[in-house]
Amino acid sequence: MNLHEFQAKEVLKRFGIHSPACHIVKSEAEAEAFLKKSGWQKAVVKAQVHAGGRGKAGGVLLAKTPEEILQFVKNMLSKKLVTKQTGSQGVPVELVMLSELIDIEEEYYASVIIDRKRAGLSLIISREGGVEIEEVAEKDPGKVMNIPISASGKIREYQKIEISKFMGWPLSNSAVVLLQQLIDAFIKEDAAMIEINPLVKTKQGEFLALDAKMALDDNALYRQKDASLYYDPSQIPEQEAEAKKHDLSYIALEGEIGCMVNGAGLAMATMDIIQHFGGKPANFLDVGGGASKEKVAEGFKIILHDPSVKAIFVNIFGGIMNCETLSLGVVEAAKEIKLKVPLVVRMEGTNVEKGKAVLRSSGLNILVLEDMESAAKKVTELAHAGKGR
Image 1 (tube, rainbow, N blue to C red):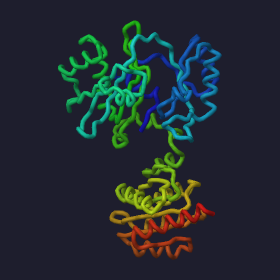
Image 2: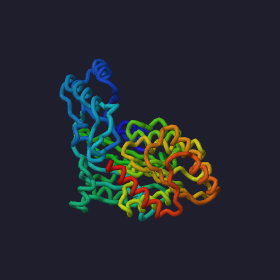
Image 3: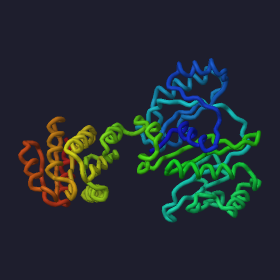
Image 4: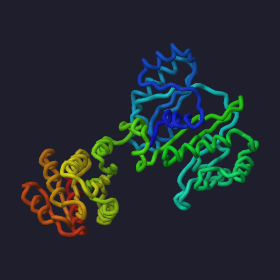
């Protein structure tokens, strides 16, 4: 789960990592009230969205007068922000941060990530802050340092020496302490990624997180009591937000064939075979092993609310999943929404014959096929025929 910049900074503050003073507003009126109270004459105005590349897209602006601050806030809140990470549809800006200006002497980069190859944490640092670290690593790998972190989560003494030499800091520099605090935050908050870019040194010698990104591990949210406070459904597609309400694993894609599958592995194989026959999946939807009729119905409704869907493929292997339960859910949702696109179903497993009987007796336009290959081929043909109409 992604956090907004201001939320990431709130988390980091609990671990001793500070940021410039800031204030969050939801409207031009709130911004105006804050300016009157604070007396701020200048500010950095920053759109709060779950996407990188805000600066190049007009989502980070330097306002030199109160009038500019209010105008920038008004403009940001009135439209979606489109960056290279959002796609052409963009994401809505519902919150704007007003951040104080500071005197910057140096800019650095620091992040903690999970190194999948090593199955451990890595601390990534660079003297090149304020730019995209991927570009720095590609153009000049020597400017980026990757420090493996032990299972204890502590930076070892020899690593502190290496870090200080690489970054040009005195060994006793407070920034080395800050890097340890960053690792502590990652571990204790069950993060998947934390990034400070740039980490700045002010002319007064203080180190501050000028910008921060943070993502939490979805599998650990149950033990993070504050995690629900960070969730912002406006930052994800409407169908994905609805799916979360019903504990469904749904990811919107850009194809024309809606997919409902149980099990992530089968879901991936289903999308692959659709691609093999020339189709494009419109979504990833895993209803899980023990889904109820109601849960299946909600998943089906979510698929049907996507206007790009020209056909639907339900592919179920019922080990834990009861095929009859799934069929009842599909029929219920299809009747409620008045199914108008072709539906192809392939199912095997528990109560499969009862499940097929439910579908065949529903009176709906449902084609039940026996194997995955023929079903994928047929649903692709039907989707292409639907696109041509």
